[in-house]
Image (cartoon, rainbow, N blue to C red; front, side):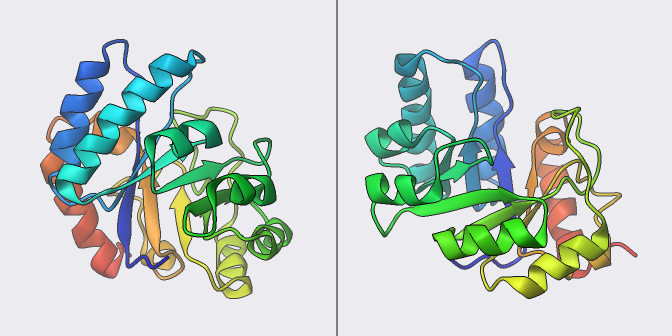
Length: 208
């Protein structure tokens, strides 16, 4: 899996799924490389239907679709991959279910975890939180030195996550990630396309 300072968008929960579809299309039409469908809904049929609609949207724009946690949904809708948290299905089990060609991402906060995930077969790592996140209040932040050490320790792409905005995306972060993962900065924006353009501009050089 190759990433080159890409934007990795994670879906936000809305009461009306059509609102999510509208905002997501506005975003990925501006050049989002990867979309992760993450939902708190437990009903499998709802998850499947929503994931399937997002897959069709991603196919329209050539965006990769990753499913958070649910290996079964990823397999059934034919997603490009799955992202696994530290308490989710193991990488080894997910690989046995999904096969060798499916992307498997894993969450990591330490060098030790990163090396373990790489050895178990992860294709990329979501590393953070880099800043306090409005969507995960209890997420512990990591030091920039930890991000640097993780980048040096594993040869797979690093996706920086947690509270990233146009204003706090520093050159130091940009130099040590292959992509950024965002939610609120895009979905809560008054001008989604403009926000994405600004993020891409900063990703080219980083804000000092």
